Length: 139
Image (cartoon, rainbow, N blue to C red; front, side, top):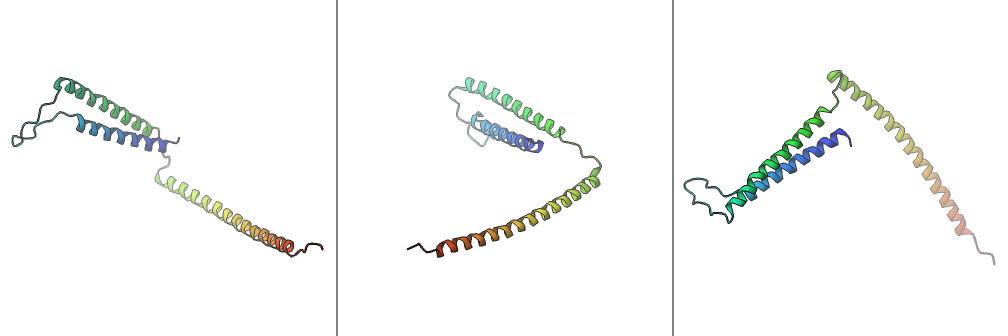
């Protein structure tokens, strides 16, 4: 897999981890009173057990997010450094475009030759099938 695909996969992984972390925190966070204008939230059934579980989840999830971010940074660091600056890159792009145009013209010529050959084969097939249809069965 090339480096760009790996970067895209890592970004997707980070996004999924962030999404799951926020969703889990929304789902499992204990209720909190927003202001004095709101009533006290109802107590949970097992406050000590839920609190213990909830206090560990953010640590584990944040560790996974940090690990994924470090992997992303390592992939970015592995990207090749462009040499020669912008002018060299533009020259390379122009060279590649010229090569692409030449290959495209060659392919176009091959396509035209193939179409001519196809027409010839179709004509010959038509003549052969007409000849077979015009044959009469011997008496």
